[in-house]
Length: 326
Image (cartoon, rainbow, N blue to C red; front, side):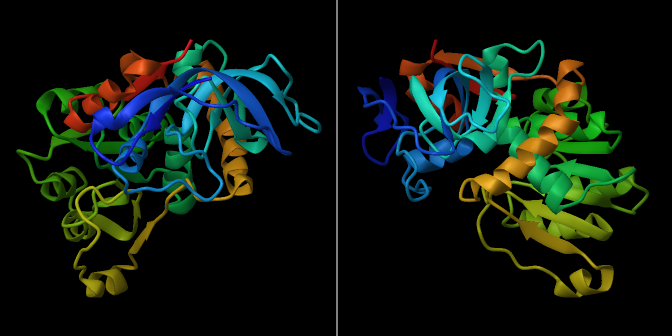
């Protein structure tokens, strides 16, 4: 099968087309003929040598796909050969075929194309797990999304706003701020020209927000504490701003603040399967009604994965960068 491999750690051009054997299907897995795959920041980290695949996972990058089931362990499932599905995988998505744990496979939402469905797994699993499960965004609570124009950001904005929450989002240009507002953010904040903590406090009458979805960490964390409401929660999903920070633990104690974080890739298929079931029950109906929708910036053919990575590293995109396989 055709695939894209990381020839050695380095810049985008180390990604090269290759021929690989078809992946072998094990118990509890399905084999998917890939139509489209998403490009995500963890793929870039892996390419650079900073994010090794979990033991037993493919060394081929790619964490989300959409395609057609061609084989697999389908007993005791509602799936069948020929079904159009999307799936979260631990690796191997940049290829013509990939295996996925059956728990992590979901039907393509009604009315969505294969390309659109491939935008779903990595971002929706991550946002649901961190914003709604871990940080427990509930009721009429408010959310601040750092990096609102990223794939994760546009997902979090749409999901939270569709569920009735006030959402604020940061982005690095006025155009990206406008895109966040168009997707449902009440207010976009250009972090290059405005201090997000000051803006958030002014928008909430100094109360602060209940939940912050943070992919920056580093020196953002002290400012995030300052614009959290009492009992507020910060969910960290990446450390683009650095892995170390100094926090005022007196604030944490006095105001009962929570700073938590997680990475999804090494978690078990059972854990991810539980997220998949929640998504199918609570989010798939919204997708069918287009209350949440795909935001695709650029589509590259599989053989141009290096160009897709270069675009992601430029930071000029809004939403998803995709690879078309078929």
